[in-house]
Length: 265
Image (cartoon, rainbow, N blue to C red; front, side, top):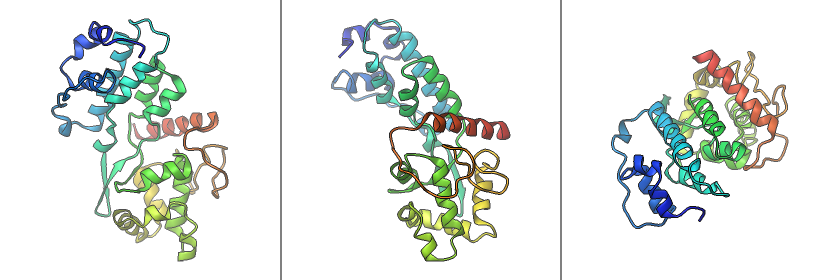
């Protein structure tokens, strides 16, 4: 371990957060202290925006009140602290369609942003901007779309949208069977959600308009943008790596989110 528990307890961060959920989790998970963390009271009443800002504030304090004050060669211990107490705001954003509550599914995980920028103010600023607004929502189920798209498409939202387009526009079962996420679509809540969309005049248009992503993730003709390569995405066609994104995909996804926020601010 790169810092001792005594160094931690002498820090300004500990002084600010002692006897709170955040510091208690660090003591338990990082320094292996036997304790029951304080509860984060009022969490059930907090909004997506509340949780998003709370995490930004505490991450900033980890950097400014701890990491910048203790001279250690390996800074990864401070990331481990953040990841231990991290609260994902996605569960706080719920959107209903077809009688099914759908929770947000963030496009940039905190871990992916950390791998890109390391423990830095840039990491926090990227998280602040690109997780500020929830965009995509899926029914929450074991083996649901939000989980399966990670393993199947390396978290790529463009191929997820294409797969949904194929399913929603399928005229027969054979066409539906071309969908890579088909097993997720057959889950009870997801199936009810998709059937409610399929019952509309133009199902994929209905979904895109519900998300509000025309012009940012699909074009005016409701074709899916190929975020990796540019142009329109017509078919699934290459291998996916769940861990690594190319630089073009990462940067172009940020542009898609910027476009979405520009249209919806």
